[in-house]
Structures are given as C-alpha cells and as structure tokens.
Image (cartoon, rainbow, N blue to C red; front, side):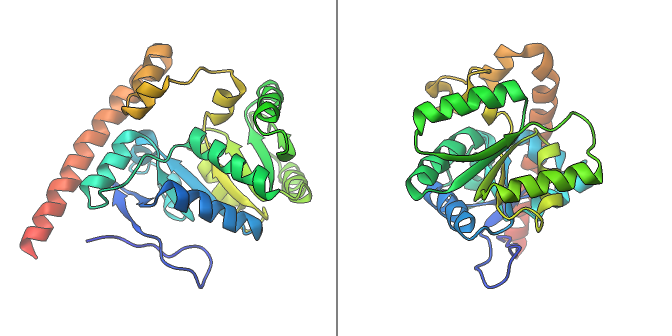
Length: 267
C-alpha cells in the first residue's frame, strides 16, 4: 500500500511517495522537483527539502529527531541509486535518482532565468568564496543574496536570530544548506516558519561545485557507483560509514520488501 504524507501548508495536493525503511521519500521527476522548488521560492514560502541517500535513510532508524525532520519535510528526494532503485521496486517504476549537486545546478539555471535570489549557508569561508567565483562563471546573471559560514559550535539565540534576519533581508527565494547530514536536516526543520525561503540541504555540493572536492566522472554517476568512487577517494574516512550503512540498508530493505509482498498476498 502506498503511503502519503500531508505537506506543511494547507490546500495543496498530498505528497506521492513511499517509506524506505523509516524515511518517507517522494516519487517525482526532475521537472516536478525543480518546478515545486521554483514555485515555492517565488512565493517565499518557508519550506525545506531533504536529499536522502542510503546514509540518511539508515540514520532515520536510529535517530528519532532526524527521522522526524526528514518525514516532516516538504520534499524528500531519492539521492543515491539504491534509494531510487528501492522506489522502483516499491511500484514507482520510472523513478530517477534526484541528487543534491545536480538539483542545485538545475535550480540555479532556473533561478538565473527567473531572476530569483539564492543564499548559501554552510561550509567554510574559503569554499564559499570559491563557489561564488565558479557560479559566476557558469551563471553570470545569477543573483546571490549572500553566503554565510556558521561557526563549528552551537549558536546562541542572539546569533541564530541575526542569521535568520540576515537571510530574510537578502531577499532569498531559495537557501542552499551545506552542513552535512544529519545537522542540515535538523537545522532546516528548526528554521521552517522563520526563514522566508525554501531551504534545500545539499551536503557536499558546495565542495563539488567550488572545486574543493572532485566529483565522480559521469560514467560512475550514471551507473550508480558514485559512492564507490568517493570511497576510493577517501577510504579511511568513508569505509566504516559505507560498509556499515550499506549493509544495514540492504538487510532492512529486503525485510521491508518481503513484508510488503507478504501483506499484499494476505490481502
């Protein structure tokens, strides 16, 4: 049976999608994802979008606060080939992978065309400066309302309020958040209703597009092997995460898939 969650605001159609482990993931196309973000941004609606890979989905099974943040999002896209594959197995046969770095660039092309304002929150000052230069070369008419690298510590209430005011004063339609999982998802959930823009958590996308971290070649991306390329680039940091989370995902999803087939057979 397909699951549906009600969106944050009223008078809009229910989200279409399915739970993968304990994370609700939207079944939608690239055009639908970019179209909704653009539409919400044009109206300065306070919403947030989670880009969910295997690590995100597995984390929802052990971190309740993170699970609530993901499942209360206005959109949660299937980043990572295994998540898109899971949706296809669960009935959404045309589902594509909708990942953060590509979503960011596809939206920025629209933002430049439509004169929408963007803001970048997260990462380091050095990366943000390099990102500005790179984006200006690709989107010379793009309106960047501002960038901000928060300190690597909890913010005081006054600091947080100043940041919210700064983002709102920039006129941003969309705020890209690069704090990493699960921090960025929790931050967006805490700031919905306060930031007058669509917040999109894009993880390492700032590093990729700034040229700080090399992204996997297109062949690896298109064949669902971007995670393996990253593992080869940073084996010490990522080995434990990928081996443990990928194993937990495979075991958990196989259990879910078998139970879903059993439920259908018993119905």
